[in-house]
Length: 153
Length: 409
Ligand SMILES: Cc1ncc(COP(=O)(O)O)c(C=O)c1O
Image (cartoon, rainbow over all chains, first blue to last red):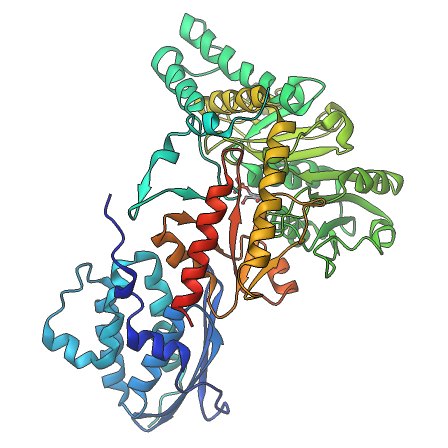
């Protein structure tokens, strides 16, 4: 039996900061914004993601919902990271984040971690398998919103 | 005989586990109980000496397996005071018991527009099968509500029961710990011409149960919550109700004859036990109820009551109101299931921090989403006791909760 890694791996300072002071809370009018709802049936976490897409760029993003520290921090960090990003870059970031969550040893290359910026602080989550769903909820919901958004010419 | 919890604890191998550097503090018996050695040994002896398929076997071990399986049925019948072992039908768990009730009894007796009364306090196991029956057969569902004292609101009970065919309700909430007034509900249901089904998944494991005086027509429970193994549950019903209940699942074991024209169902419990049953699990459950009987369910209930009183007292006074108990604040009509709302700390995080102390509590909606909604909660962290739980474990819980509060403020 492996022992649980120390809790500081999970609750890093930046993570706790995002949990206590979440960024981009609120709603955006739909339309023009696109909304998607996500929910984790296991623990009851719920999130709504509102994205305002302008051309190829996520011009604004807002979040509502409730959940544990990991899901709240992850969604807050996500919102800060994707605001102003192109759709393509955003999808790339989502993919990289999911990789981070599934890499058991979390020994992703320095390069990959650097690209993730402060989101890399969530790398410890991968060592707590039951919490991975908490961390990925917002990201999956964002993907849903992007998929649902009408194509812009 | 006095209740010696120290001796009793030595019967449970899992209590010797060390997790995250701490002795295991198991406070999740509401989800599933720990297993005493006698249950493990009974299953081991079964597999090592008697294993064979039950019924119809002629050779020695087949006869022994049948005897062990049917012996377990008799043990369970005795444990709940059933008039006959034939009233005890083995299922996979309480959930399957409710599906049997809704599907087999329900489809035979309920037609479109017939009313079944449920409660807002109930587990999904006693809600979803009825929703399914509503969707397939057009029955009507009504619900008892829960009041601010965490009790069933009985003020409109007669109204709800008016014209109802069945009241199906829990005897003990797996979220609030609330013990419901089954005797009173039985009287009122019967007066209104309705039958009463009881979810005993929590109550049978922690309180003395006697179906002869309970007043219920049906009782569902799970072996794994009462020191038995997983994979075995029970639906008890009075023989007169079994007599009017068609088979549930079809297959071998549940027939008396099959031709190319069709089948004739078996009589007795076998009618509802299609296929090879969970034999070893039944044997384990038999050992579990014999073990519980040897301690005495009165003694178990008294022990858990004292412990619950201690826990409610400590939890209410250790945190300056920052930890709220979602459930009755005294032990009056209450069992040892304690749901907590910790200010500023999500139940998931509470559990995570507690785990670091070796403390097992369960975060979530506990399969009672309507109840959670009633109190505006998405989840709670739930501590629950078993016959082996001790005050020192409550102390560990309190210390660990203090740690969680500190970390998150
Ligand atoms: C009150 C209650 N009813 C029903 C169940 C369902 O039991 P099982 O999952 O063993 O079928 C549970 C267990 O979670 C319960 O606590």
